[in-house]
Image (cartoon, rainbow, N blue to C red; front, side, top):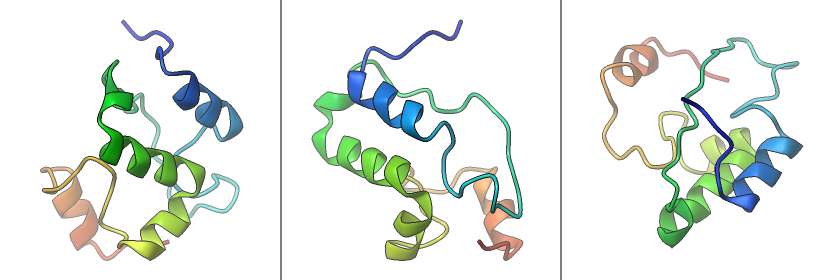
Length: 91
């Protein structure tokens, strides 16, 4: 069951930009899903929470700074990311 996250900061960020990554108006690919399932205590993980906030504020700038293959909290690409990123699709 999905419900509103207890983090006021995450709720504010998602209210300002109700998407992740590129603005859908300019995106070449759009993925739909309910994948922003951060743990209730994510704010306690200060380093990762800062990365999440940086990504949510400007996903394209985040990718340009780190790399297009990198997402916050993902140190090892999972089985979805490997084929996706090996396809050479870029923003």
